[in-house]
Length: 108
Image (tube, rainbow, N blue to C red):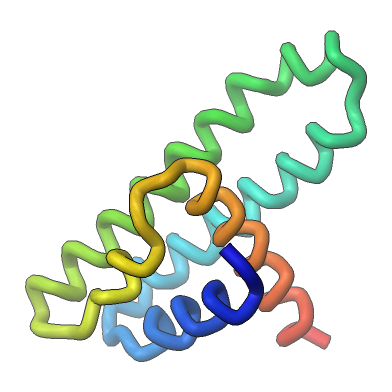
């Protein structure tokens, strides 16, 4: 996953009329990315304590991606972004971090 791919996927997601589900996806991406940054600054013992929370946030983001994609498909919207995103957990986690970056820049 690189920035260009993440940005292209984000642009496809923005086109949905499923605004509540899109916002859930973005919020869960931001939450996961925030936890990742915190986790990266901890020592091994502290990381072990935080690991369950990080995994839960990652799973929630993955679930939100799946839910949005499924609902877009049911409403005849283009959900091909999910194919581009794939199923690899690390890639999906990287996408969450890119979304956090994109939303941070948009907020400036």
